[in-house]
Length: 635
Image (tube, rainbow, N blue to C red):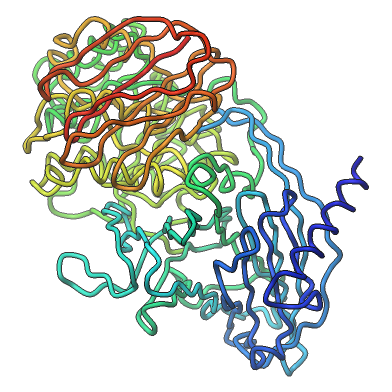
């Protein structure tokens, strides 16, 4: 059977090659289903520059994307010859995830390595994998001396004007919007912007999309971003660290292009597929779940013992397993200290989580504590041991310095040492996920999103939230768990104008291994009984995920399964009423009992109905208010 699949794949490759803009001499490779085709043309056709072209369903979507790296002792930017190409081999991924959009992940690809040589005979290896849902590639270099350093990367993605794009301005915390643009001359708040962070979504004709990102950042690696300051229609990969030291044999992280329909993008697990397998022998102690969270409603609430107790009591009432005690808990007063709070939680059957400052970004005057407890290994191990002894289940570590190699190594230090003491981790004010949740499954979530916390800071989110929320499932949340802190039904320092139906849908639509519920205890108590029950029983990790309908910034209907129950969340990202229609036949093993939570006649009302799905029903339509939404539970 394996040989038969291989013969079929080669036949597809030859057929695709005959319809491509290059001959079979290019030695391309196709995806197992034959939809994606990669072409690496002879370097003579490109003035000695290495490049690749991508076709989807026999149509070119990425033409002559540049390849190359430069060190201080080797140049692979031009004057290259394609020296050799490996045979095609099959790569299969089959693994379990404790968090994320799917508990059992499988994927397969065909892989080839292309070896280029410069005029000095020095070689650059580029390994491509072509999956059904995208393309992964990475570089390999052999250092010529012990002190060699990587200067820059040549990889450049040409995206001509006219193609839609949803890119976020690059910043160290990845907390920004993904505004729609149709060319590379975008501005952010009237300022010309040249640096863009991952993930970056591009829309081509015929409803084909491409999400650009990276994965498998190992120790000694920095992250990267995109730069189009030279040519607005060409996005070059820029490294966050200049002069990166090379090991004797060095490999880059995987550069990823997730390609296909919007459903292919949203449902893809390519980021974890190419990442290192789980490094932990024992994972029984790792438990996703919902967390009561004091910060959103009470900015400095963790200093107040009585308010902290209220949120622990909220977790008890809502049957949530965790309660997070946020910043400044080392200053706790008003009837007790942090030891009293931890003991109170444990007696109530709630697992406490504690916040820490990473002390790499926000330090000095005004920086919140506790401080300087995790930076040095001896201090970190001492603190982790104390946490384990106190019964703390995990930590939220905040305010990181960016994507340079030193910070990436620090993330790994924090994760590896936390595993020794069975502490789960939330990296906040941090970089985006790049596959670590497979390698270190006790990494429950990461922020890297302009989330509900921003209602505390400025009025900017209020008018933009609905459109932003309807963009995130196609961009940021594709690559991994996202600590947005959804489900804010009341107002914080600044109001929200999304409906109750919209807010109730967000914990279904947004995936996070720890899902922080930020509103006041009185607000959850005042919700209709059925809505409170939904939030009490809502999973934080899923067995399957399906995109049923939607378009970035306009709407999204997303279905997630846990066991035999499907949760369907839908939101309207526009300021107008909208009817969201979606198919049910994409959901296997669909039950008959159904509960619908949808917008009432006003923003703050919910209309809740129980019924049964009629036999043969394949479609549903639900009316939404402006910035509205709904949840459908089917079991």
